[in-house]
Structure formats: structure tokens, C-alpha cells
Image (cartoon, rainbow, N blue to C red; front, side):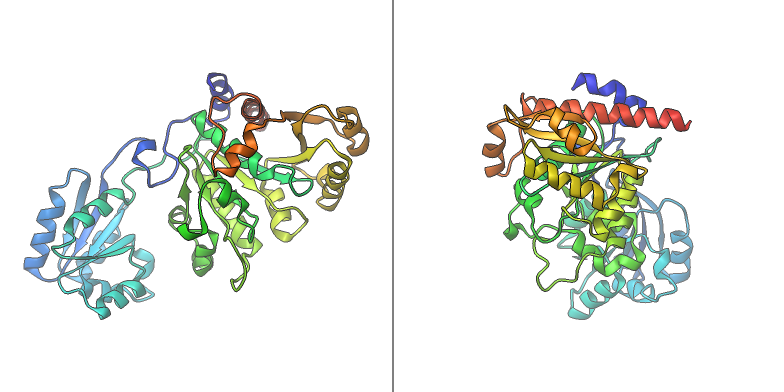
Length: 402
């Protein structure tokens, strides 16, 4: 992947940095979590302060024993976490004060049902019994925003992947494209917009029993969605990219509205360098909005007539030929076939932009819920080439705009 670094650098996609807020293996510059402590009882206050202040991963920016002083401290810039006793948490649970709160942890000497309820009402990220769970408190304080991700210096590359028909390989291409970007040093996130099927979830090695967080967890905060909400919903794949998963089933669940998908994509594009969208087939509002937000739309075809006519319907339904984004054809599982690239151009009016060779290793790895090894040949090599072409095209667009 060395040859990928130069075009990525041109497009602002090669800056070092972590992928999601949870993995210390993939961090950028490590900084200490900046916290404020708000505890009324003087003895309890001193115990927590002494314990937390000795942790080199934490910077105590201030401590307060009354609400007014605490509110002043919380008004300072860059506060990552507030550590509160139940009494302070109760006073800050009013709608007028909630917008001032950073991520909040509650420490309680007596763990009671009312304490837990008040923490939930406040929207606390965790509740810890003191002193039994003080080690867990320290770990959580170090984790919460312990790494600051630099904002991308250039607009993120947003790539939408859609298949011409079922079985074209959309899940394969989207997941391996994200892995290829990550392997080249790009902070990449993969977003699954195909709610209800869970193909991507299974392909990434997750089981329904794992109950991973999904975009459905953001429905309750759709009207106050923030980058922190989205970051908390991300899953981290071992290949180095982040994933926002779709719910495995929509049965009995509220449908995911297109405006939530659009808001999530916009927030992720402000935080990551590459955003890969795994789209369902069809022309739903979700698909149309994703296409509008994308810099590149990859329409995946296979070299057979059913796929070609499916691609023609997709191009027509989404008006891809005349859209701002346009479309690039990617042929998957290419081998000897009666349908040729010339036939593709004749039927669809555009050439194949990139081809991915048929590879017997793909179904074997997918059956195990794995991705191809980074240095695999054939299909993985072709995806790496596609990744480079996308980076170069993105760099060219940025140069034209400047």
C-alpha cells in the first residue's frame, strides 16, 4: 500500500490519527482527559479528588462543592468529563443546565435505585460505587476523550457503493474498500444503510447474539444529535476502520428515517477522512439522500445481462447520469464471460471504470465472517487499485476547487 500514500496525501487523507475513540492501538496524539469534579460532601470530595488527581492520564481542571462554582467551571473550554455526586447530578438535570454538561460520570457512596434513576435522567455515561469501583472510574475517565482527533484539513471523501442486483457483491466491495483505506493510513468509517438484512454485520464477523450498537440507538437523540452520540454508536473493526451498523431486523422497530442517515453522514464526514456508504438497492429516500451527499457513486455490476439491465434501471431511477456526483461502473467477479466490457458500454452508455477479478478466496473468507488479508492478491489487489483511483480523483477535485 506504499503507492497509496502519495495520492492520499494530496487529498488530505494520509494524516495519522485514530479510527474511533475507543482503541488505544490506533491513536493519534495522546492527551490527558480534562475533567471537573463536583461533589458536595467535603470528605467524599477530598477522597475522589485525591484518587483522580494522581492518575497521569487525567487533568483535573477544577473542583467545586456547590452548584454555582461547578457551573462556572463547566463553562470553561475543553472540559471532557464531569464527575458528579448524586446531589450535584440532581441539581444539573434541569433542561436549562443540561446543554452545558460534557460527558458525565456519577460516583455514589450508596448505590440506590433513586441514584440510578437520576443518573439515567441526567444522561450520565456511567455510575460508579465508591470506593469499590474507583479503578473502573479511572479507566473510564482516561478513555473518555483521552485522544483528540484533529479535524481533517480537507473535505472527507464520501463514497457510496450500490449493487445493480442482489448478489453483485456490494457488501464485499464496501467492507474491503474501507479496509483498504484504513491499511493506507486513512481514518475511515463504513456506514451500513441497508437496514433489516444485516449482511454487512455478519460479513464483519458479528453475530446477532453480540447485540452490537447500531444506528437505531441514535433514534432517541435524533433531534439533538451530536458527534459524541455518533461516536458512541460506532463499532471498531480489527482491520482498523470504524463501522456504523444497521439494525439486523426492523421488525417491531421504528424505521430509520433518511434525515438521520443524512445527519450521521455529515457528522462523520467532519470527523473522518474517508466515509464509505453501503447502500441498499432501489430508489428510496435513504438511497437518494446518500447519493446526493456522496463524492463518488460506485455502481457494482457483474458481467451478465440481468446485472446490466438492473444497472440501467438504477441509473435511470436515481438519475445518476445527470447528477452532480455521476457514477462509476465497477465490474465484480470478472472472468471469461459472454458479456464483455464493450457490451457494458453499449447497454449502459459508459465504460467500466475498474474491474475486480473473480477470486475463490472471497466466499471462503465471507463464510467465516472475515475479510481478505491486506496483502492478498487478485480481488484484494484490485480493490487496493480502486482505492488509489478514488484518492487521486478526490485530490483532483480538491485542486480544481482551490
